[in-house]
Image 1 (cartoon, helix red, strand yellow):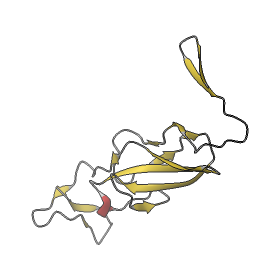
Image 2: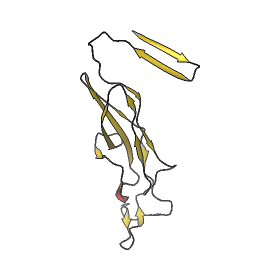
Image 3: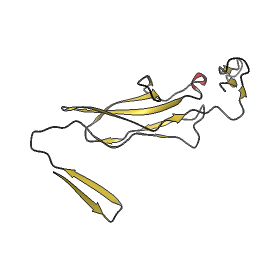
Image 4: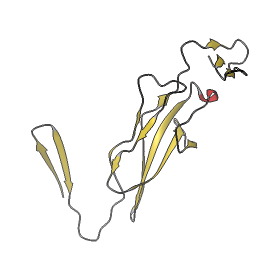
Length: 137
């Protein structure tokens, strides 16, 4: 049995009543998000914000968008990771199963004053101060 209760059209609550002793796999009520200040650029801090689920969130990962390739458990990206898209994933687990949810993808943009590489598009760093000299087109 499922019942919906709406309070002043601002909040929607969903109450799910299950027979006693019957477990169900976790569900995500809200998906994870990536918080950043405007257009994500090299050097900016990205924060993965956990979603909410009907079971504890036991694992988080940063993934290359559209793949199952985990790149990190923290968001520290280097110049070689410019112009790639990333997602933040949460995994919730209980006795009935495991469920994962991903944020919308975010692309790491190069700083606006970088030059385009005429050769192969790789990001090249200054040997003096580590600034980006060339970036992928």
